[in-house]
Amino acid sequence: MEAPIGEFEHIMPTHVPSPVVIRSARAHGVWHVTCDDVFFGDYLSQDAARSAASKAAKDIEEQGRAAEIVFGPRSP
Image (tube, rainbow, N blue to C red):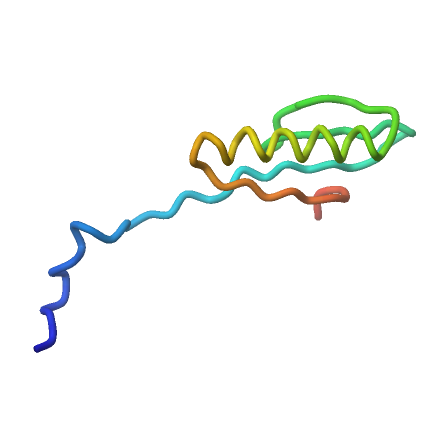
């Protein structure tokens, strides 16, 4: 027997939040890291910026939220 449309709406999420976007990009010799376009930190090496971005993603995911790490500048 097929369930009527909407019968399971109360158990299925209707909105899945977008992941927090953690971005690491180099500008003027400094690696900038942001979380949803909010300043997170500046780093002098790519390795340090990647490490910071990975740690931020892990912290966000431990809170039960999704995180996405993006390397490179924001598209215009």
